[in-house]
Image 1: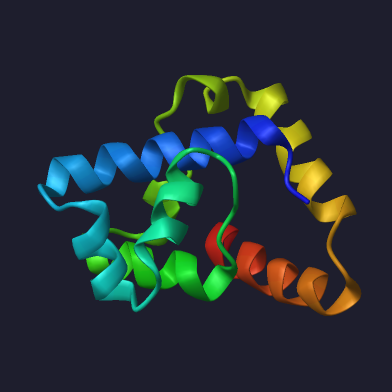
Image 2: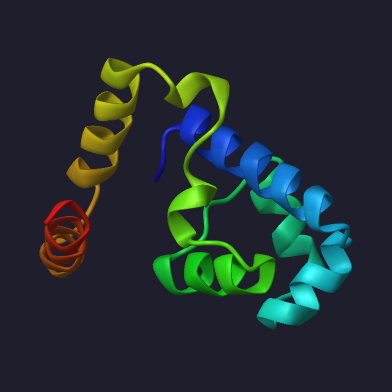
Length: 109
């Protein structure tokens, strides 16, 4: 399970980007083929999307997926961000860690 502030930060960022694009939760849900309630739950921090949904959301918003994780006040502090990442990694299983490692390796290389 994700830390509550990470879920809220992600949800706020998603809502910000969705509003910037000028689409409703319902329209975004249609674009990514999920129930509109799920978009609402993500934006309010009640749930956190899996990697494939994050990619779909980014594509629907016409942004790089990395933009969904930045520009919120609580992620500006480097130490806080590292702690959030570490908390997520601790909750991941081996297969997820392998995928995360590969993504990070590509991103920072």
